[in-house]
Amino acid sequence: MKILLCRPRGFCAGVERAIDTVERALAKFGRPVYVRHEIVHNKVVVDDLVAKGAIFVDDLAAVPAGSHVIFSAHGVAPEVFAQADHLALHAVDATCPLVTKVHVEARQFAAKGYTILLIGHADHVEVEGVVGEAPDRIRVVANPAAAEVVDVDDPGRVAVLTQTTLSVDEAMLVMNVLRRRFPQLATPRKEDICYATTNRQMAVKNLRGKVDVWLVIGDRMSSNSNRLRELGAGSGVPAHMVLGPDEIDAGWFVGKSAVGVTSGASTPEGSVRAVVERLRELGATSVEEIDGIHETVEFSLPAEVR
Image 1 (cartoon, helix red, strand yellow):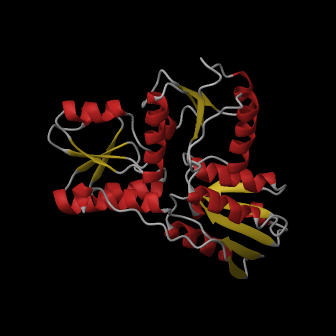
Image 2: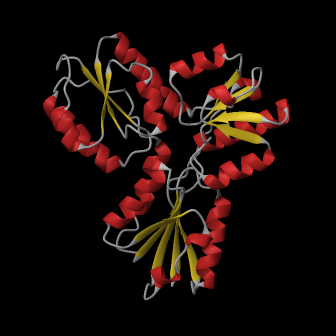
């Protein structure tokens, strides 16, 4: 059995920025530093930051007054900033700049009186944050069926935005319905699905027909990791998602000659190396790294921790 290892994979620029923000805050302000929600959706990353002195909370009321609190890469609604200010907390915003872009677009469209159709999953923390920018004007549209029936105030003033971590193909199916229903649909100047999501999905597509089982390394809470697993399964071969080597079932690879391996945008490379080593123990004889799009994107850190 051979391993075909996708590139790009793993950390994107937004994830690196968020993790660096927590580590820099710990170095600058000392332990503990509080983080609202998981900084990124990966238990390995979160556990590592906990060991370094980060405390993760879901409710800002649990944070002592005067403390530093970091907002996760997924973004938060304006009311969360207001709550932090009310509680006398020092907020550090680690929102991915590409998510911030969607927040800005939501505010701009809302100010112009548009009904905003947000393609995404209503229960995802990123979507919750964007909806908070204009809750009376935003409708979340999860799939083509929902796009067929979504109601708007004025069909001539409708705009569309997208969660950054969606399946490119599925988002396009929803977009096609919305364009048909609302010919004057306003869109952002640049698409919202982030470059890292697109590149990782393209790397999986490029291996269609070349692997007979997929292994996606990622947290089950990670939207982009789930989309990678679905994309692998959509090619007609088994696709499994694991957080690390301990979750691998040797039976998945019986009779298989090539396993495709990729990882979500919040998965550390150490998890990938550990999984590859486990596959070697199970009989993998070679590892071929498949070249893909070279990513050079970098984001500057929040001013508070530079």
